[in-house]
Image (cartoon, rainbow, N blue to C red; front, side):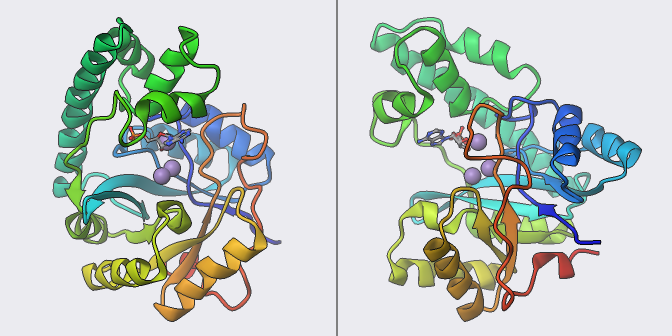
Length: 277
Ligand code: AMP
Ligand code: MN
Ligand code: MN
Ligand code: MN
């Protein structure tokens, strides 16, 4: 039987719209046979997701997507096959939750200065027990008709350099990679083409990432065209990294992003799942 992998997606534990249970059911309906839940900076959804995956017979890989900092830019590192109870990782996610709460408060103050009150209460309520993200702010701005799309919320308020942006001292990339590897996981550079790095900066990043213990790069993600897949695959080969595949699914309202709806990993790329126990 051919397997269908999706090793990057989000639930209500961070900025996804579906609960871990709903997400696993949807993945199953889409034919996914190996799923990893990789919420932003939290492992809170993993227990529920695994219970559901075991019940319906889909292979589940414990994951996370850590926000990290390198050269003053934020890079997302996915961890696959982690032990969420590894104390330094558990402590890190705990600290990241406080950091995200403090950032949200500062962002809300900045919006108030732009005559948009009420953001803090709204995003706290929307996130519930989960991580507060800029997606929650985008949804708030949308609900209050300050913008007409999520993208517009980022373009006008939330992106770097915009009025509500707050720079956040995420963990150093090398430290974050060490949390993942010491927790028994494989560190994967998420959506490598989204950082808009030149080839030279990409080389510096991947050298550092490898030195820190990184072993994989996302070669196939949603909405990548064949040229982009080829470029990411070239990086995997040049830097001797395995290739990962993940939709980065957040909600069902984006018709271009669906669980498991991914181009196949090119034949010449060693799949990351060969490293997963
Ligand atoms: P945060 O980690 O809180 O800074 O939030 C980052 C999340 O916001 C990302 O994971 C995306 O889900 C979302 N995001 C970032 N940039 C955009 C954008 N331009 N349009 C829509 N969503 C975005
Ligand atoms: Mn997100
Ligand atoms: Mn990401
Ligand atoms: Mn993601």
